[in-house]
Length: 395
Image (cartoon, rainbow, N blue to C red; front, side):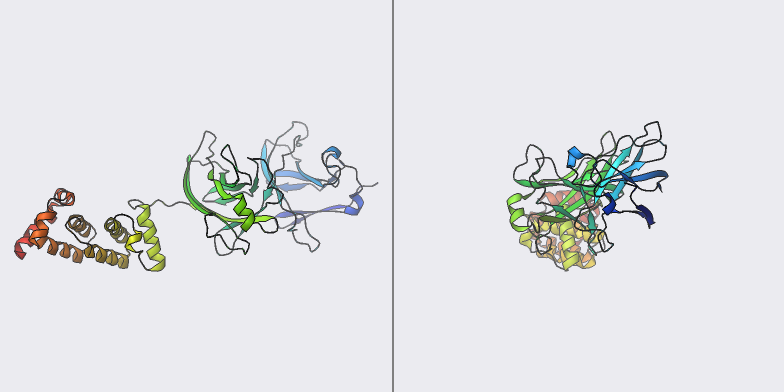
């Protein structure tokens, strides 16, 4: 049998390798078809295709095998080899998942060949979700649900915040704490450089209608990862992302599960509590404040914190609303601290209302014995002098 027809064509940034399958389908396992020599990344490469597989014992001739071989002499090289099978319509086939290899190719010192092929691992492609900034990760649950604890599938490598990452999904969990739940992690794949990586990792399961879940199977995690000796950082994620029973009942569709996720750099905001930040975001998006019963044990302290935040970020309407809430809740216990906030953040009307409150003799006699008044005297002596004059005027 002569050499089968094979054609190598450069198509944009990809290489199309076309062979005559009719000529090769009766090949014995281990017989190879070579591509032309290809130049990429400063190296010469060749594609090797085994129509009946590389090894008869491994796959009994039932699978096609494909490899990338380096043909040029050079030192160790790391490359990403990504393969798509094209459908009859000339488009990448969607029924067979993309295979991606991230591997090191070592020089064997003879002809510059690769003496050891990179090990293939199954990766699931990530696709962008238009307009959302999220990536979609669709995993074959049916064929992977019986994997042992600690084994799973992972996504392509994706760049976010100047770092490389991938999603790792473990259908039967990971570690000694695994049991009846799927685990999901975000793995850092590049060196951090500074030894620390900060970011926000969001992940949601998509329901059978393609809508992000609004239940507990949506997660957001703000993380700070420290680099190790190799420069890589720890992973971040959830050992108990979702119970398998809930997953199989509500989220598996056509044997697959779909996540959407996003990783972005974190922004550090100083001198603002997480609770105040959440309320500020709610105000920005809804133009309303939550009810006082939703603000924790001390709504007055929350409004004081929000007054500071509103002044810092020039949210004038929020600042006015917080001032209104503070004078509505004015008491002998809060007047001194409220006056300090009014002075610090330039709320003259609120400051005048606090002076009016102090001018009432009964209020003054009780307020001067509070911790807030003691701090006011220590930190704001000018206000105390002004208060003294105001009280005399009212008297």
